[in-house]
Image (cartoon, rainbow, N blue to C red; front, side, top):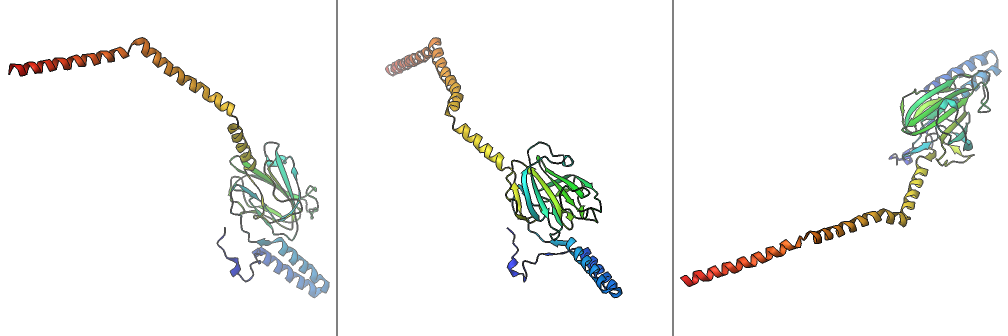
Length: 303
């Protein structure tokens, strides 16, 4: 739980802003619009619209990462379009056939951050340059889009992401390289003016959000590792506990060996006659005391 008290802030909901390059670019576009407006007034709107687009492309937000372990969070803002089983692209190099794809649509007004969906390290990053003619990413598989494949791993756990956006301009950038360590919810790249992303997670992970739900990057929990494996382990333990026949069969040889040992010891002692020496020792001791008693009386008589 965070120790920050947001109630002390004047506008606690105001946790977004713009990059420095966004302010500079918007101001430059606005000045160009003013100069064009001097030549012909309607040209001013060209610079004005360009300034708005630049601000939208550089919009950022401050996010609070959930305080939990073994979870996967949404890497970017957006709305879930579909959830279902799918084969990951070859570029992600995800082994096995059991994968769930969470497809998300990112609007042009959403924040531009791409964060790490889990703790771990970047396994590899593959980039594909788009075609400037494909400005709008109306479909996730439209030809000419700028695409980035990012695979993350942590031990035996791994997830994959495929980002797609328009091919005009610097719309998609990944700041991390192969081998870089990443923290849950920390920034790893930038997606400008919206697009699409597919998040591939293991099929045994239950996806908590549903299609139509809006995701908040680095805050919305997609699922948790280990849920199914824990249930299976508990079920196996229950099956072992509920099978008394197996326990009796396992203990039976031990009890048989104990009985055999006791019987063998008694039989050997009886056959070897180990009890007789004890009786002889008792008899020798009594005779010795009797002899000492006689000698003591003899000494007294002599005195």
